[in-house]
Length: 79
Image (cartoon, rainbow, N blue to C red; front, side, top):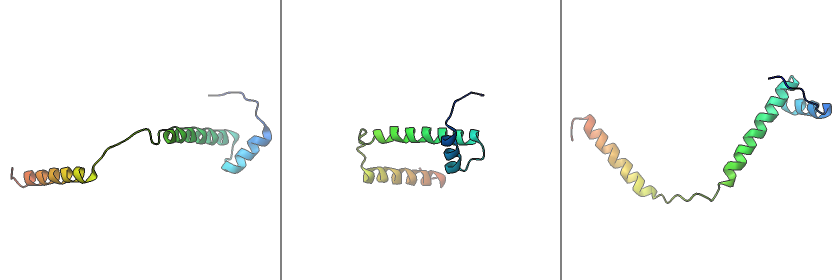
């Protein structure tokens, strides 16, 4: 999509230098992608501590081992 923007030339040159982009378009794309990535990370960080999982890993492990044992017996023709 073509868009006309009035951008600070010095700022764009700095952006091209730090991103090692060969074109202004590439530099803008990289900057936009990075901004989106950071905002998504911020949203994930804001969820920290808001979800409580009450998991008993020992019980879950026992259930998984039992399940694996059942599958193994079935593979060998036992029920």
